[in-house]
Amino acid sequence: MTEVDSATLIESGRRVLATEGAAVSAFADALGDSFVQAVECILDCKGRVIVSGMGKSGHVGCKIAATLASTGTPAQFVHPAEASHGDLGMVTRADVVMVLSNSGETPELADIIAHTRRFDIPMIGVASRADSTLLQQSDIAIVLPQAPEACPNGLAPTTSTTLTLALGDALAVALMDHRHFTPDDFRSFHPGGQLGARLATVANLMHGGEALPLVPETMPMPEVLIAISQKGFGVAGVTSADGKLAGIITDGDLRRSMEGLLDRKAGDVMTRGPRTVATTALASEALGIMNEKKITSLFAEDPDRPGYASGILHVHDCLRAGLV
Image 1 (spheres, rainbow, N blue to C red):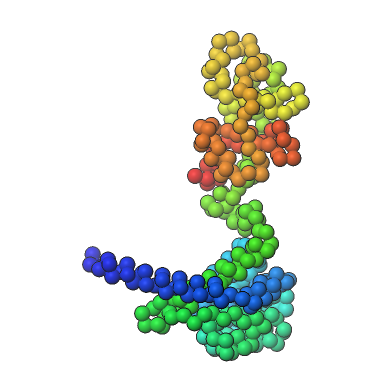
Image 2 (cartoon, rainbow, N blue to C red):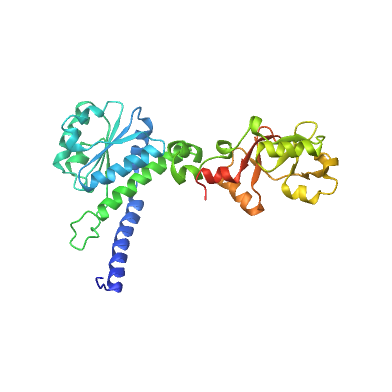
């Protein structure tokens, strides 16, 4: 195994983070009208935000396009070299183009810049030199602050790409704030994986309709036991004469009422005032309640119909959805 000097490595890492952090802080202080104009331009866009950049700027551009797309702003990355060989057809008059280049003089960007000028497509330029060709040609010019690269030779794109990446996040979040982008909106773009599971609502996972294990207070316990067995949740919700959820019968209630159980009715055995959850609540919140109360099921109420059981959520539903 290669021997290393831990102290030197940590110092190197801290120097990079401090250099880039200082640059991002300076950028935050300098952010002004051009940022507002860029947000307004994107909000007015009828098509997509086309992001383009060469080299490391291109890699950052891919991430910016992905972040915008996943937060409610249709976006696509177009590689400038491929654009010169036909992909310019992806860029339409309905779009906004965001071009990234630290120097602002990247030759591969010439054709996509010319395309925006030829067809009067709004262009947001991002570069570190206000007098660069890119920013001089742009409708909206965002100037990155002059800051040293974190690379010890001052050559490898490090600080500059961090600044561009942070700008992309700032634009995406500003757009989210303006549009009041909600967790439900976010989930619609992230249906898969653990993120999608964490954003699933109770209504997305619960069982309703005929699957609901509901019995009236007047039902004899032999019939209640059959209903519990048939529905398969191990519990039964007990409804009052007006159909509202009055109580719940669990295995604990059955054990406590063993003596003369079959001679009783549901209302005699149930526990009144069961804990419920709103259908609009996150499933992760419901799972937290179940863990806290050491229960395996929760009845769900529609906020528009308080007191009535609209569904039931079992802990296994949460586990199948990927909630842990």
